[in-house]
Length: 596
Image 1: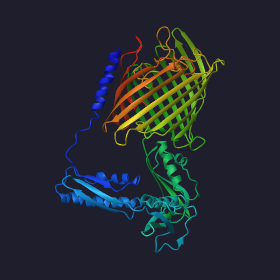
Image 2: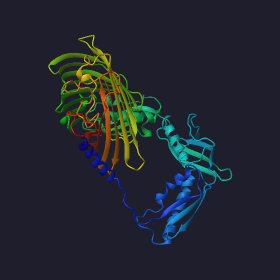
Image 3: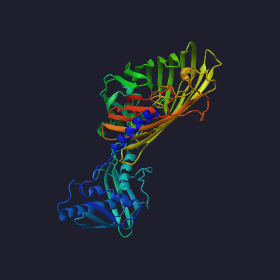
Image 4: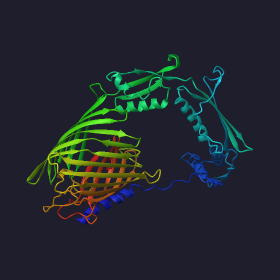
């Protein structure tokens, strides 16, 4: 069994490595070399322009052609040096023909520094703009005397000045001219920014365009500004983001009306909206060796009763589990950042060790307290009947889960970098038997990092820890115990079958669990990717992690087919230390999205 288990990953590792082979080099092409630059960071900037030296796929036919390319690259390097503040730099080059090597000798000289920065503002562009306006005291360019006079900072300061004006009541502010004076004797730069304010205005009434099925009060509920307050572009952007979050609109354009339409200093704000279909049906399929074929279906109405609320009906059917759920989502509940979800579900789960029939109802409040961190909490009630062999027991579990999550991933369906942390603590109390109570706490960490900027490799790791404390194992319902094994845990092992076993060789679950994953992902092209992975872990009978328990290991490979809605996953996994007469030799997993 062990030899068969290693054969699949061994063969795939050879294929995996072979798919990343590098093609042999072709004919010699022109090369640009930089000499004379030892300043940290500057050499990297100049060498970053080397690919632009010779962009043809064929070598030059003559020395004159190479010399022409060298002159163009000489000008490019001078502009790059100036953009870094080296306005007195000199660049020369020497050709080596027919070796096709061009050496650029660079003398950067001193890096120039910022000196005087002036900001001048008119309500209208001269000469009809009237007298010059004194800039607001809080208006800051961000440029300080003595900092390097880099072009990106000089240009960025102009953009920052205009952006600040649009946040101070000037919706039509724009840049007129930017005058930079370089003093080669003092190695400094003076900059004068000339801006047009366009007049100062307050928020006027919202003007909604394009509404059909959505009521105007639904849009007003998402508006972040107060009528009569000074215009602030940040409030307009925030409103657009909130409207997008509702899922009611496919296109949103928010902009101030023409200046001639202002009443005194109040300017109407136009909200040009295009509604999207409010009803959506989605279907999904999956296959796992341990769970069999599965199907899921969702129906959602994002404008239920024209109130901008969301009603979702969902169902899932696999060989192990069948359920039907209803969610009613209320955005902006008591606060513009809160989302309240009222939920209910009926379902059943049949495993080798237990059968569970249950009804769940509850409420869940979500509050994002930053762009990355979210707090969720709410009461729930589960009425269930759990049968283990010939014994059945009824439970009436009242719970109040609290979840804190942080998400810094660059993509939720296919992350390349970043991390995610989720900690969920749930106290349970059996209202039918007040002596039965316990607390579950589960922590999941996942981390992603690219291996090189252009290699296409991503290293992905996951760690899951769980504890059920406050009651003995027999007191905790079987469907609330800790399990390991399966496609979302330790691949290569059947669903929930890693951990303590009874005398019949069937899993009993535990009061704690530890499992982890390590994946190396390779994006081959736009459509396909490959993955190799190792998973491990165990469920423990004790409420604390018992590292003396046997750790089960699984490994395998996978193929990813990338679609607009996320990667289609196909994984093959084998147990590396299978238990005799318990574990199968191979497991297959097919679903949408990465494993984690």
